[in-house]
Length: 315
Ligand SMILES: [Zn+2]
Image (cartoon, rainbow, N blue to C red):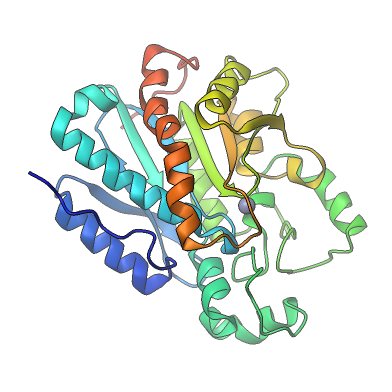
């Protein structure tokens, strides 16, 4: 049976569009499980999809940052593609019976809505974020959540060291980008993510950002077993450059936290090339470039690579 393909890359994923996409995915794939890990600052759902019933988790996350919403479209598209493949070839062939894939297309729905629709999307926080944006009504470069906190600097990894750098950059409070917040996990989005990570201990985490066609991983001490080799494999599959995060980008991020505190492999993928925000149409090319890595990562960990000890949670 031929299924007509859905136009994932037609519009940006604002609240209305996300609902449309989720309705489509549930209708097209009745077996797909959709849940929430929590709510954003303004009460928007932090949605995830779960595919498979195994105890070993793999995690893909999009849109930590407001203007990087194209990564959500890429992950919605991937979920659709994967579910179609499962209906043709069976779950076991794609995921194995021991694994579960969790896809969280958008960790920062408030930031995305603000980036797309301006200050009014922040509701009661409207005046506050306008001030944080320097009084500017143009939010096309907004990266933070609705409290002006950059979620990917709000994880508990080098937080204190980053605070010093933040001051050097002249950031002392809520801002469009790079403000790490009052304390690690001060934000509802990152706190929900931490709880989810501690519950699932993903054997592999890929977190999608834009742009630069680069893959970053955090060299923890002691190093996470297999993490560098797996990074090279991802680089080979995507054609992206592999590197270690440097400067301000090396602190407080999700991948840094997972590597440092959970000792598990996690990668930040800076998808696509161009100037942020990338367009919807750019998503199609990004997806084509990532597709093999997203599919293959489902089974490589199944063969015990990267190492999977201590990654089974008690579901
Ligand atoms: Zn980003």
